[in-house]
Amino acid sequence: MATITVSVKDEIIERFRETVAMNLGVGKGTLGKAMEEALSRWVYEKQQEEIAARQKKMMAKGFKLGKI
Image 1 (cartoon, rainbow, N blue to C red):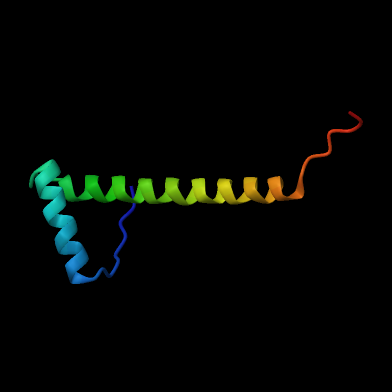
Image 2 (image 1 turned 90 degrees about the vertical axis):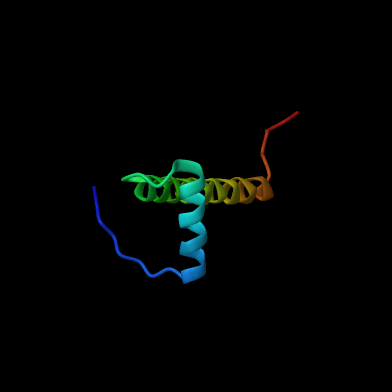
């Protein structure tokens, strides 16, 4: 497990903390659990965007199906 330090705008972190408290409570580890989920979702979303961009590029090139 890694530890990272980041700077986040006060209003964003406050909204994040409030949302975590409403959804997961205020117990030990809830903020870290929510941050891990948020980072995982962000990474997944960016990976899917990259896959879609590659597929669009391939579609733009077209397909060679040979003689029909």
